[in-house]
Length: 316
Image (cartoon, rainbow, N blue to C red; front, side, top):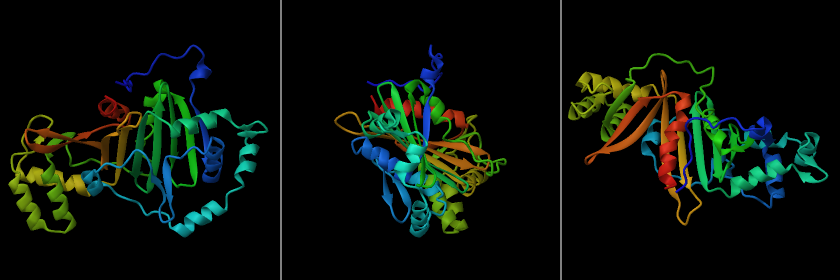
């Protein structure tokens, strides 16, 4: 079983420079050129002319709750995306000008990072939206190394590579909330546990503007919603909470984790939603035969520790 510690950071390495991660900003043509030089290493995404960059491995896993609560900012049109790519310089010239290509070839670090992206043991695909910003990131780990690729527009990418000990710090960058996203008090408690069917049915009633249906749904689940203090919410409190979870949502993170190094691929999913006061995790679980969802207030630095137990499950 693979064990990866995403908790406390490891002690500083003896040689500080050996422990520092490296980052390189590459345009899509530059990235493709480097991948070609790395033995045609496959990139972890596919290009869709209508929407730009879409995720590749690991395979998608169904997450209907995140689909319902998620928001998707307007995607760039195919024409605008093509125009942006057309303005970019020749990749070989621009890479050489920055010292990333020499007469000996592409920088070995870039080639190694792209090789790791193409042949990992563990993969994490991350899709994040906050306000008008939507980004995608692909994290790939094997042995003691991690390589990541990230973009917000499908035109410019950040490629990074570092030791597994630094992975937790890298993951904590993901939930950073843009400065232009205003936060305010939320009507959702710090912790609330409720039936999945309630949250799902309430969302349908709100989308169809059926206040009468929402009242009926909430009444059906009276006494089934519990806050962090063990208090069972009243009908009016339940309505306030389920309305807030849906109406306040203006961002989300979905992370799909996979063990891709074995004979079969195992998938785990993490979902966070951005409510009025910040991030809240959505953790499905079962109580007896009932499928429930725990909605818990979290901070950006909690992201790595949230992924850790799921990562342990998929690599077991």
